[in-house]
Length: 266
Ligand SMILES: NC(=O)c1ccc[n+]([C@@H]2O[C@H](COP(=O)([O-])OP(=O)(O)OC[C@H]3O[C@@H](n4cnc5c(N)ncnc54)[C@H](O)[C@@H]3O)[C@@H](O)[C@H]2O)c1
View 1 (tube, rainbow, N blue to C red):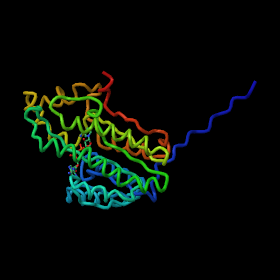
View 2 (cartoon, helix red, strand yellow; view 1 turned 45 degrees about the horizontal axis):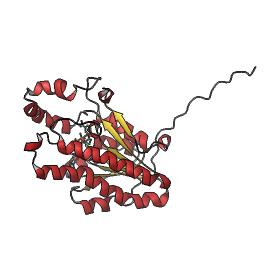
View 3 (spheres, protein in one colour; view 1 turned 90 degrees about the horizontal axis):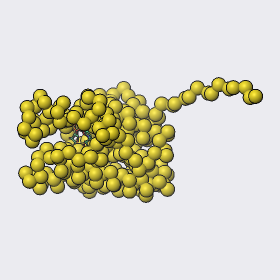
View 4 (cartoon, rainbow, N blue to C red; view 1 turned 180 degrees about the vertical axis):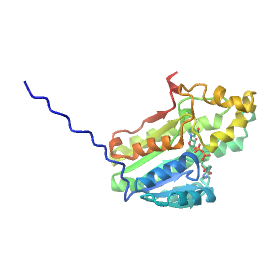
């Protein structure tokens, strides 16, 4: 009989991105801001991209004292050539910027549909395209695409957003297949409703589209399919992004990390 031996205590080293550069889009607010701060806390030099200059300045201020640094980079991602250039030389790319409009298809302005697809699908393609040569050159890279439950499920009145997020899922998987031989992983994170300005802004639109008062939107529309009846915090999403950038996630690629309080369990 062999003597039982105590297993060594599990040791999970903290995420260390010292010496790494991380580009986060939509970093001036909400989830992007939380991601930028989380990656900076892990030691990364964060290139914070957004069209909101003031928000980026506030972020850089808020990042003082963390292990890494935050460098604001004011850019409108509809400038696709500039987006691709901005991504050159980054080790970690977080495609996060997004916008929302809630309207029935027959009333949905075609120019807004075009902008949503440009910012949320075509810009990520161009950013990935700009980032991969450096990642491939060093044999390591992390692409994290902030998708949504709406990358996996549709909701009425969100044609552009749902189309863009479903497209982003496909782009992420293709990046994973091409990147694997070069040490590059690509994944999505898929939150349910997160407590951010993007959600606050759609309450009035949702109330109008569904014909109910604003105070009923949270429980009757946004959280209707969530088993956990609360909004998720941006920091919880940032933690999932950080996990995908860490050494324990090198075999995790081409997948979608769903943080939806049970929504897609239905
Ligand atoms: N809030 C949610 O409930 C939720 C849920 C699932 C997924 N998401 C996704 O998370 C991401 C971030 O959303 P959020 O809730 O933090 O939104 P947010 O509105 O708080 O932040 C989005 C950021 O993107 C920036 N942005 C928008 N268009 C841009 C452009 N053309 N160029 C540069 N920057 C631009 C905005 O300035 C803003 O800072 C989005 O992709 C969104 O689809 C959000």
